[in-house]
Length: 326
Image (cartoon, rainbow, N blue to C red; front, side, top):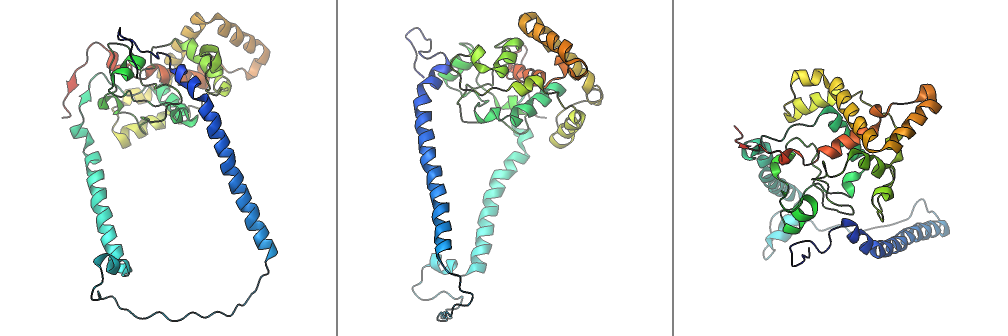
């Protein structure tokens, strides 16, 4: 959070924080070893205890009968103690209390559309971006990256620049589920769209150390080689429209595959123009693999890039108006 006198951040690079906390990760790993060692020792101890004992099928035992106190409140008995020993009354009162709390929490979410300002520039994800978002969740990316820039000066400067915007509620209206997050082993990604070229994301997923020296992010080479499963893509769009009121038109749903194809081709074209080495490698694979070769346009990495390049870009458009929820 520190700033220099000229208004720039002292710690501009997020990797500075990553390298600084590596010793603490090692300490955490050591603590985890103690924890798992204790669990293993407990299992061994339980096993040895059972092994050393002898099973007795019938053991004579007798307990004195409990006094019949009754359900009426006794003289001098506190109301809390009385409720605790009357399970039926306790269950009814607990249900009423939880129901009141549930109503207070749930009802506002049911009317969220009427009280959340809509940003006209924010549009639904394209079919390919929707697939990429599912891959993002599948790979656990949201476990290490948050997607919400907090309204603090250092947050905005670090992730969006001096004249940037912190995250607005209206930007997430088409996100199901939300991926705000809180843990930041890696930087916040809500303004990731357009910050780096497509080829950067391609290489970053293949090996993060290529683009970010000192990164502790794992590699995702299978995204580069796996063919994207688009068999449920149209159904996902229909679900988003019917269950979550995402305004996809019938024409958009009917042309989903062509829409995705066009976006994939555009991303691959940019990757090839930015990174000749990637193009050469793909062409070499095409020759060596023959009939088993999967065109780059059809691979999972392209959907992932499409999603990452979309993040936070809607609000950057020049014509932004806040519409009523009517």
